[in-house]
Length: 69
Image 1 (cartoon, rainbow, N blue to C red):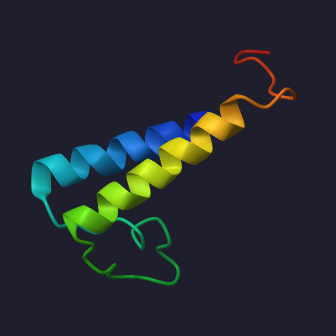
Image 2 (cartoon, helix red, strand yellow; image 1 turned 180 degrees about the horizontal axis):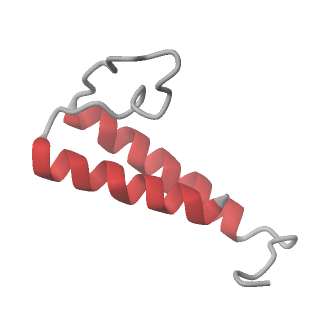
């Protein structure tokens, strides 16, 4: 879970850096949002920091199985 959160945060930050305001929060839910709304750069970065904080917590759990196991 932590690794997936880091990758999602990286992609969100990359999109915000390259394109500014862009779809992010609704973009992965194509069944409900056929045309996802545009999120501001600030909203995306706030979500990126939330994802990274959650990833840190998930990666520090004691029941984490090593990658490749």
